Length: 342
Image 1 (spheres, one colour):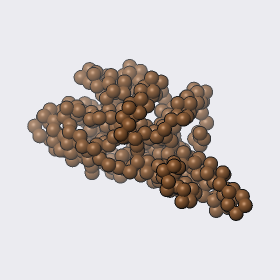
Image 2 (image 1 turned 45 degrees about the horizontal axis):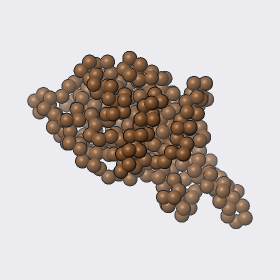
Image 3 (image 1 turned 90 degrees about the horizontal axis):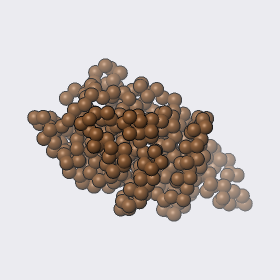
Image 4 (image 1 turned 180 degrees about the vertical axis):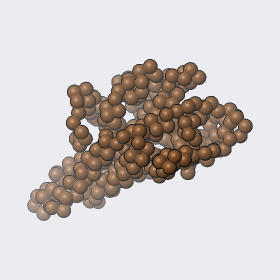
């Protein structure tokens, strides 16, 4: 599989090869194949990739940010739902890791046996209200590739709330792509919630740039598939790549995938405006690249025998899951020095 990002160091090249070996011959995931989802997650856990960027003292591998983004880009090519679940697991452990109150949950997240979502408390799809020492309300969607997850709610200022699975009732939600995400809507009935102080910029930066890397993977895989198809398909006495308009579209697809990677790797994770803009740009560009790649397949692009239609669905669903609109709103409040209030 191609790589359109920055030059990799020796360790990253080894991980690149490891990821390609892992994904070679694997199949896309589907919600009704929970055994395949669990097996794929277990492989990532066994290889130390599931919580790759989490501090070692919190159970992770302690890898640098660029290495984490590399793994997420690779996952975005075939298992974007697991990529997004991994991003949320790492973001959640950046919140609760090292806090003795959550030791059991920390271990379960690292082991992949517990799903966890991280959501913005003031996003449009999160409607929670304080009731005594607890929270009541709904969360319209979370995508954790698991059953009923734990949830970390990023609240006002540096506050986060941790909801346990027993506080939640889940209902499946249909979506267009992200096979294996096991998307659910949650009803929240927490008589008492645990609060914790967080580095909100770190957590939000991890979520946003992680999602951007996954979007780059979707776009890169779509561009590769379009090039492979156009190179092998003859029309008017030669391959489709001999047609100037086709070549231009293929070049634009490759450029789009490369641009997403450049933005994801180049953004300052502590700059809320940069990370929000990177996420929004990545999601929109991935959809554009995937749509162009589908067109490069002609009518065959709409058939499930080809991956082109899956890339479009995955790109659309990733944008819905990662909520770039909510991120832009959060960044605007950060820049204004006016964090959301209860």
